[in-house]
Image (cartoon, rainbow, N blue to C red; front, side, top):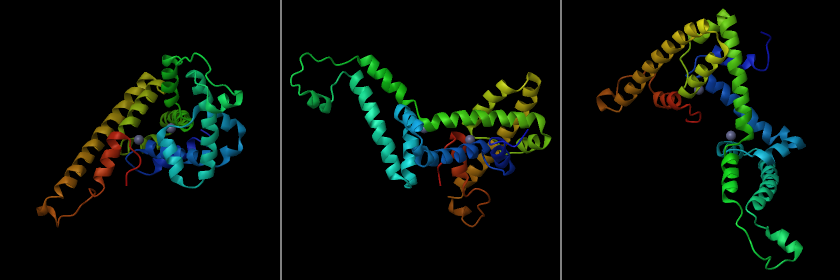
Length: 248
Ligand SMILES: [Zn+2]
Ligand SMILES: [Zn+2]
């Protein structure tokens, strides 16, 4: 397979052992995408239409704000987003905005309706599920999964590195199971799942021992005994079972 924007990072993250190479891939792309929305995207009018329409989830607003690199840019995104969303909401809620009312010079506009509550609820529910960054992430993760199975089937070196890894976090294990069903033949799936499951179980057991030693180190009788690999076992354990990325 030609080196592409997808194969390069896949090969890179599998070259170094970690608790979940897919978390690593996702984090890298997520950071790049956050930077993109705070930088080059601002110059693209089409992107502003997208951010006004879709907006961002709480996690990604938080990430953009916390970069503290372009608060003006984020302010501009939020300003035009609010303009667009306020228009939609006031229409759905059948509330005439103050500025519209003043423009028309109307007082006591007659009978008011409270709008269709179900429609308002549906719009808000669906809108809260949308995020420009989440949708790019999910698209790109699907491409990465495709590349992983392509390489797994065709490149022995990659397959060996994959099978020799430390397993995956649970959400990404789920993603790999879905991907294998989609991209591998049934005989390929047999071999793949056998390797994946034994790698996952062995590494979860390894992690359990590391976490267990972490807890035993709180016993004063173990004060002078070495930490071994357990010093950061709590962090790695939480990341492994939940897929949480930020925890230092
Ligand atoms: Zn992961
Ligand atoms: Zn998001």
